Image (cartoon, rainbow, N blue to C red; front, side):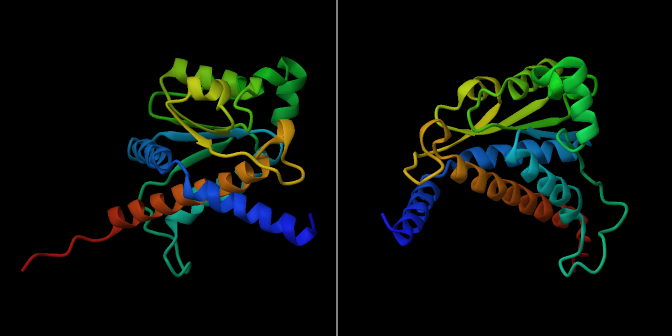
Amino acid sequence: MSTVDDIQLYLTEKRAIIDHFPVDAVVAAAEMLFRTYDEGGTVYAMGNGGNAGTLDHAYCDFKHHPFVSEDKSRPVSASVRRLTFVNLCGSSAELSGLVNDLGPDTMFSASLEPFATERDLVMAYSGSGNSPNVVRALQAATKAGARTFAMTKGDGGRCRELADVCLVVPGTSRFPGQTGRNDNNFHFEDLMLSVNHMLVGLLKQRVGQAARPVQPTA
């Protein structure tokens, strides 16, 4: 195949995934996010490798974007509840310390377990659905009574069993770099950012509706 053919293959695969995307799972995740926000809970998020980098982007978006005006000139009123969002991948010092002291399999659960409550939402991202540190964190979240959302691909792995809502990216790939054990991983990582953007936008809409003054009736 030529380079053009490969690029067209990537885009064709992407369109097929979008056409069969599990929208219901995004709706369910949004409902859990809204409940967490309404109850003053905390969103915790985790992932490994490139997913951790995407969560740094998500941290910025979830924490700030729903709470600025549409023209980005000012924040919404201080009286409007903010969302507390904790990126469990956010501190290299914390992660390296936890790995050094407790091991890589417990680095997320050790950070989460002392704080998670039934008001919270724990969001887990794992391409395989079987990353031990993500699995253990979901188990800790369930034990605490927190809501749980996972995003994965393939057969969903353990995440599919453990999460209240598990979004499994459909499809398989023939594109170079995402075949074999890495099957569909580029598409999964692309769509992780898309799902986060959908959730941020939906939360912004909800915050905007709640902050809008009630118009007096005639």
